[in-house]
Image (cartoon, rainbow, N blue to C red; front, side, top):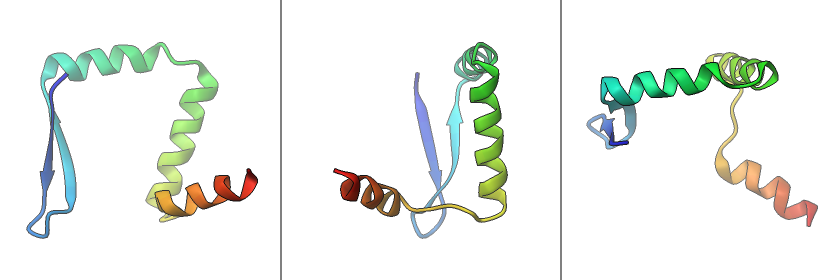
Length: 67
């Protein structure tokens, strides 16, 4: 799978580009996911729309403390 990342003038990633073949393959695979995984993805997307996100660093700090 070839993926291209599109960036804005500041170099921040804004979009992803992939072939139709790869896109259709991803859609097929997504339909094979268990319902609880699909619901988790939907929940995460809604949280992202609301701005309820954390940086990778914040998440990793939680797991470093748990050791």
